[in-house]
Image (cartoon, rainbow, N blue to C red; front, top):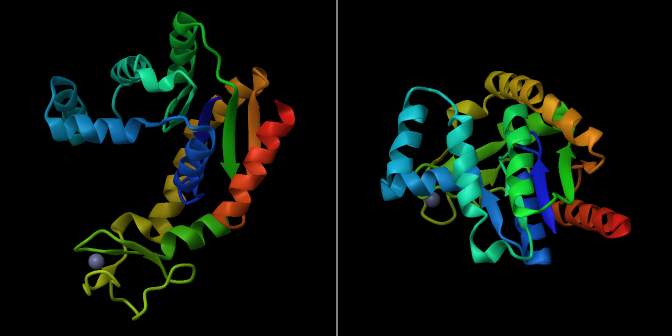
Length: 216
Ligand SMILES: [Zn+2]
């Protein structure tokens, strides 16, 4: 199974990706995670990535494509893969078609996890994070035992600067602007699935798997 998972911030894409990779026994290929890894190793690629991030830019398309192309050479992708965070624009989606062609592969499904803005806003603005150990909480869905205090290490919980209503709204607008062309691209290829992202992560995972199995 070769999958691409997309969805706006706060929709629960990460948890879905992790459940699907377990279910299909395929690797979770996240470009964000790969960038962080290269930066940590201080590799030549990592240094390029860091320089672009420091300049306030997205990692450029050709470098991103190279990292993905390289990753797909690994043995663990023989059963398929789940791509997360890529392609992030139309240019990358088109380039990715060429990469797949070189390997003689096709993406089976592009899954777009969708939810309405009010729910996304609630999920994101309700997040709290422990400054010390990084554990995350939610003021409604995943409360700490003592209000405002981390269960794990007892440190105070804070809200991330970008998790405020105003910034989240802006992030959602930018996300939709960037993503619509990719959605149109995959819709034309008829392997695009829009899935309702409301409900618990178990419910959403089941909804996705039923859909995938039903179509196969
Ligand atoms: Zn903590």
